Image: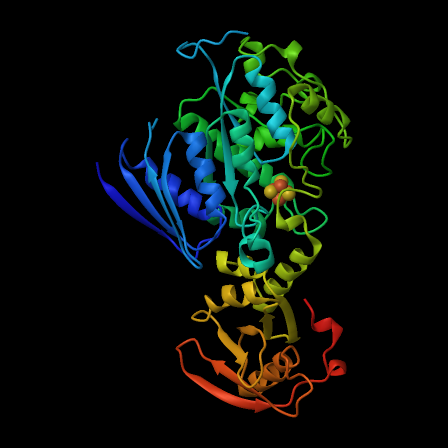
Length: 77
Length: 353
Ligand code: SF4
């Protein structure tokens, strides 16, 4: 089980979701991806993307200028 | 209908999901026939979803949902969002079929998206493609004579099924092969929305997005005029992602052909434009509170002084004798200059892009 980091700061939605999606595709079930973002839209969009694609949100840490979302990778196709 | 999820003969369709009602209904019609559907959505750089709501502070408190993701969740389908912004430039810059009312190259755009979806379908072993297009719905891309152009030029051919108007179109392969029952497909046409609304009621969809003009900023007259101005000033039709994002932010004023000011309208835009100070000369007032401005183009010293006077008009010292403006070069070097703010009459309406 690996933990990876994705820097999606200064990207506007839906780009952080796309980068998350593309990185998750290279990972295995049970791995963790930690996504750093600045667009607050990710608080809706990354969890929605996870729900429909079978991944799990472990935590959302929202600061004034930065949001950190940890995703546990689920079953990949 | 009982659906066996392990059935290897179960057909798989990939649907173009925009986030609007039509593609939502098209997917549902197929799901009712037991077809397995996944969605695909394209990021072109001009999408209405996202972007501006992330910039303006007043909008940040109520972040909008991404409609395509929301629709996928309502339908219980997977959604793949593809970043096609690089390849899409050619569609915007050189549309073979021209533009619509603004800089929207709808017919080329639809062909491009269906082509990308066809490639995705083949790579991922899906059987056919679905769109929510309706004959006669849109003046350019959804006419009886242009729907076949999209099927043909995209290379999708008769693998492209439009469930909402299929009965008005020639049979496609999924219908001929009996993967879907043509009788249960629909015959919607024209610009009216009534049949869609009734069908949404039948399926119990209470909430859905109804984009008015189209699905992207290129259908917006103000946005298109800013893009046209950018091309005119550069002397060539080019852009990168930063350019098209910045066109959505701030007031754009072009006092001279070779430079323009992008002036933040509020705190959220000021914070956003600050992130671009390495790419542009920027200015802000230091003696009085006021917005930041980026300067796009090739201004000389005299132009910068004029830009500073213009910016000073938008700060709290607009009626002061002098305002101190900090000019920051891309390399981080800065100078302060004292300028007299332009008067309201000196700012010409035609400078507003
Ligand atoms: S409105 Fe925009 S995204 Fe929609 S078809 Fe036209 S150009 Fe493409």
